[in-house]
Every structure is written in C-alpha cells, then in structure tokens.
Amino acid sequence: MNKVIDLKDLISKKNQMKKEKKKIIWTNGCFDILHIGHIRYLEKAKLYGDILIVGLNDDESVRKLKGEKRPIINEKERAEILSALEFIDYIVFFHETDVTKYLKALEPDVYVKGGDYTMETINQDERKIVEDYSGRIIIIPAETSNSTTNIIEKIKDS
Image (tube, rainbow, N blue to C red):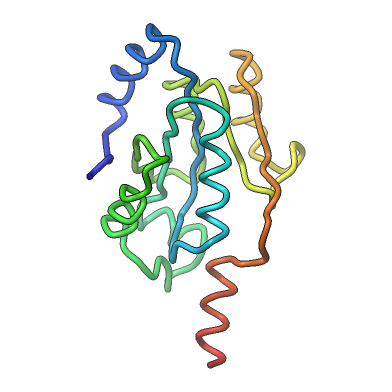
C-alpha cells in the first residue's frame, strides 16, 4: 500500500484526524538502507499516538546531508519500503534540510527524534515551533549501534 501523500492533502486529513481526537506523531529522516534500528525506532514512535506520519528526505536533501554518493536507495523505493510497515500511516517527502514548514502546517501532538539527538542538539527552530503550540518532543534512545553509514562502511570493508 502506498502511503505517500503531499502536504496539502495531509493538512486536510490532519484536520479530520483532529476532529476525531486522533493523536498525531511526526518523525522524519532519510531511512536509507532500512535496518533494525529504524524499525525499532519507528515502532516505538507509533506508541506515542494514533497516526504516525514520516517525513522522508527526498534524494536531493539526502545528498545535502550525507554527501554526493547518497542515498543508496532512491526516494521512491525508500517510500515503498516504508509504506510496507503497518505502523506507518502516512509518508510525506520533503526537500528542505529541516522540517519547520511541516511542523507549522501539521502541528503534530508529538514530535519524535532519535537518540542521536538531545533537546539541545535538535534543530532549535523546530523545537520552538513545537513548544509554541504545546506539542511534546520525545527522544527515543537508540537500541543498536546500527546506522546506514556503519552498514555502508562494513560492506566496503568486506
């Protein structure tokens, strides 16, 4: 099932979800070479509400963040893989290097970040937006040292 939606349609769905008193969770990332750390993180994120929306970095923004040789898996395939996960409700692509526009538009009840962040190291503009509308920010500690970068390095060393 393809769960990819554009921001405009997502905003109108959000309005309906809010009327239904659904708790909306937002998280975002590259999710290049999906691994067990991603799965555990996303499963835990879903526990904080009813609707899990994943902001997925498009290929251009992955290159800006990770370098010219990334992503390994293109955005359409990454979205299709994420769509197969039952605990993800919607996926929206973004090309910016931050998600301030999406947080402002959606005002999720919960903004989830991975354990490689702290309240001091997350994007402070994003933090301010969420705090201004009284949303929660949850940091989920990493359970594994797996990362896409580590997997790539392991493959290169093989």
